[in-house]
Length: 149
Image (tube, rainbow, N blue to C red):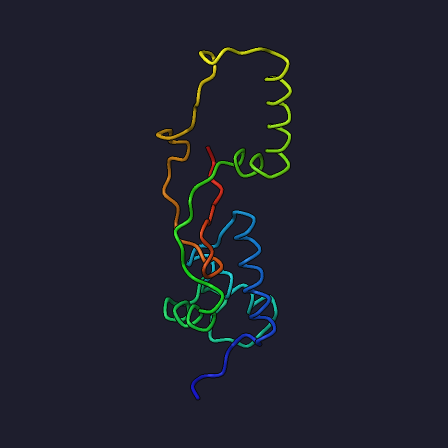
């Protein structure tokens, strides 16, 4: 029933995998970029399509249908902005190195309790710009996007 899909299912699955890959690397795709990507995909693979070469993006209805087709994998989510330094520096390996160094320095000096402070970044705004909603893996709780700071 209905129209035949423009993009073959195998290529459609590769596009979904690509969207999830770039989301994991903190470069999520907003809806306008997904619409442009779809036209580029059809043109570069020489797939007969109703999109003209001068048209740069598919319509909003196409995006809604795409979200519906892949509703089990993709959802439109508001990401949390992350600076590049935080995204690259906050990993399990880096945290292990930090705490090893911390324990070493703490053991080397006998710091009195009056010189130990608990400092966190609550209230500090590092990322200024609000992020656009991006397509991400459905059900994922923490979605990040890189920002230029």
